[in-house]
Image (cartoon, rainbow, N blue to C red; front, side):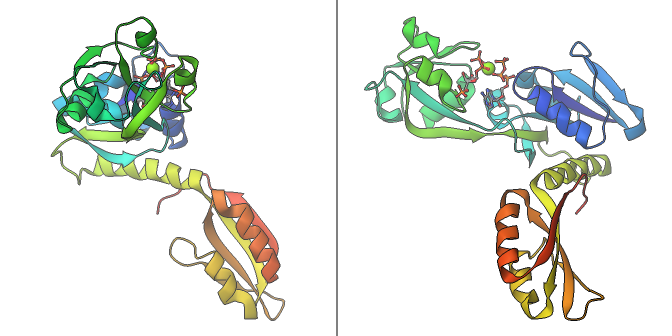
Length: 282
Ligand SMILES: Nc1ncnc2c1ncn2[C@@H]1O[C@H](COP(=O)(O)OP(=O)(O)OP(=O)(O)O)[C@@H](O)[C@H]1O
Ligand SMILES: O=P(O)(O)OC[C@H]1O[C@H](OP(=O)(O)OP(=O)(O)O)[C@H](O)[C@@H]1O
Ligand SMILES: [Mg+2]
C-alpha cells in the first residue's frame, strides 16, 4: 500500500485534500482523523504537520508527501520535489520598516526574525552576510514592533500582513514557493504505485487548467482556426454532413478560452462550445 503524507492544518491542508478527492481518493471527513486507509485505491493517508512531512518522507517511513517547497528546503531533509501542484503559491521575502535596508548585503550585524531559519541562514551564508537569526513560530510581522528583530523574512502572498504591520519588502525575493509532491531523494522513480499516484494528480491539474472546445468552421478557414486551437498534440477535425464545413475539437487553456472563442467567431466559426474536463490521463 502506498503511504502518503498530507498536510493536516494551515494553508496547504484544504486544497491538498480537495485535489486528492478530485483524483478519486477518499479523504478524511473530520479534521481529528490522523490516518485514513483508502483500500480500494491501495493508499494510506497520514495527516501530519506540513513542516514535518519532508522529514517523514526522507526517513523512508512514508513513500510520498504533499508539502510546500519552502518547508521542504527549510527542513533540510533528504527529499526532493517531483511534481508542482500550483496551490499555496507564495514568495519568501525580507521585510522591514521603510528605509531599514535595500538588500541582503545591508543585513550584516542585524537581527532577522523568521519561522524558516533553514532557508534564511542558507540565503545569508550564500550572500556572505553575517546576521543573527531569531526563530519565531508565526505572526513574525509583529517581531519588529516588539523590538525582537530589525528585519523579518516571511511568506508573502497578497502583502496584506506586511502592510498592516507598516513593513515593506526589500531586496530580491529569497524564493518562490507552492505546494509540491516530495519523495525521498534517490527513491525508485519507476515505482508503479508512485507513477499511478502522480498520473492521477497530473490528471487533476490538466482538468483544472484546460477545457474542451468544439466548433464548426468552413473548410477554407480550418488552418487559421486550428492555429488558434492547436490542442495538446493535434486537434480532431471531423467532416460535417453540411458540405464545406468541418467540426473541430481541441483542449484549450481555461484562462484563454473566452479570447479564443471571440477570435474563432471572427474567423466565421459557429456553434463554439466549451465543456469542463473532469479527469484526464495524457
Ligand atoms: N497566506 C498564504 N498564502 C499562500 N501560501 C501560504 C500562505 N501562508 C502560508 N503559505 C504556505 O503554506 C505553507 C505553510 O503551511 P503551514 O501550515 O506551516 O503554515 P500556515 O499556512 O501559515 O498555517 P498556520 O500558520 O496557521 O499553521 C508554506 O508552503 C507557505 O508558503
Ligand atoms: O501576504 P499575505 O496575504 O498577508 O499572506 C502572508 C501571511 O500569511 C501567513 O500567515 P498566517 O496567517 O498563516 O499566520 P502565521 O504568521 O502565524 O503563520 C504568512 O506567515 C504571512 O504572515
Ligand atoms: Mg502561517
